[in-house]
Amino acid sequence: MKLGLIGCGRMGKALALGAIDAGAVPPADLLAYDVFPTALDDLVNERQVTPATSIAEVAGLADVLLLCTKPHDVPAALHAIAASGTTRENLLVISVAAGLTIAALEHEVGHHARVIRSMPNTPALIGKGAAAFTRGSHATPEDVETAHRL
Image (cartoon, rainbow, N blue to C red; front, side):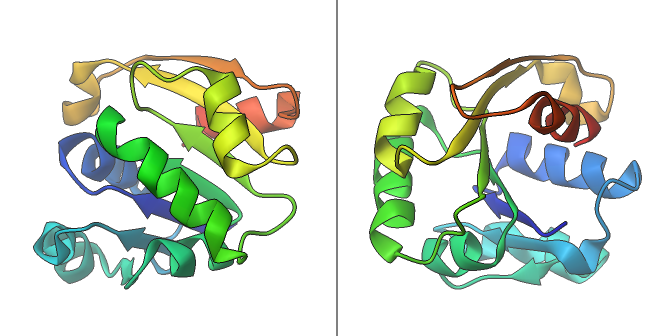
């Protein structure tokens, strides 16, 4: 599984490190992007995560896309994903952004997208968190299991 990470702030970085440490994804299979390239430095230098130069690059290579941007940045990120034309038909999008409905996420990414909305709590930043999940109309129980592993 190729995991794409969009947004490498505190929560994005914590979730990426948690997925690596849990063995859910090897660092070489994690592709990360942030509008601030220096946000990738720790993941790239310490964990050998692959840096990406654009959202389109991440969307084109990922099987699972972990969207960890600030809520006000999500529409632009989703538009970039949809407009890139590079997404795989079976792309799973997991969003941790607050305040966005699954319907809005599905609308922006496209009707075929499998979407899961997750709300991790702040102890996730130290590897002790919990998260609630809800799935969109095209997401499967297996997708929820994937989200849980991550």
